[in-house]
Image (cartoon, rainbow, N blue to C red; front, top):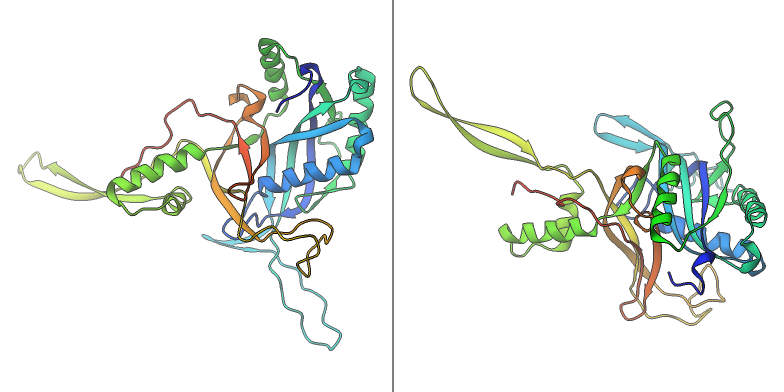
Length: 337
């Protein structure tokens, strides 16, 4: 993000939001935690709801999950969503059931924002943060409802804060270390595009026609391989062969995630496509774009940019994608292939 004056950059922290019945179907191919695009969408909706007179502009968002509770029925390895029975139709027939996945969340949202000069005072920022907390309580977060914290969970319920980001790198990192401790226990979602690229190269060594989709599917599952072992009987000297099963090593809590959308059609003029949600803006058909992510403890992040996701538009490729600057310090993935 580029700003006119560094002292106007700030972080808006909405701590420990309790969200009920958020959307657990994050894309046509994944389920579980909501897509990161749901939170960038919330960021846009919140900025529009506050309006330009609020003196705050939003640029990026970070998500820390403290707990999640998917609304599913589990029977062994098979899971099914808890579904609601829709009312019957006017003619008395049964309405079709549309599968809706839901999840309860306890999350902290961190927004990178830019403030106007009228919000550089502590009192003004405190007042705006409290107002934003009231506004977010009446909004949908990833399709879910924001509800008050459980009674007795906190001695003093955490409040939204709006803090300036220091232009000095050492002071900024020291301040971030203080902030990240407040987000424990929890896990932050970061991008691991490097894992996808590395696994694709590894697969092509044994399967030259392997695609990036093959690499994505390979990383999205737990892979077990049969390894032939030979041992020598100490008494008879016979060589005995047997098979041992081993699993691929994983660098952490790796998950397949949708990170945006790519265009399938041209950009149509406003109102040109019937049934569009908003007939006053241009319309385009798109499909999901996927990558890999990792849930990592906030205390392992070294900079606020490691946490933040920023929506980026690539007009040349028709790509609407969320990007994250996290860089792993260790070797990505070791495969047994």
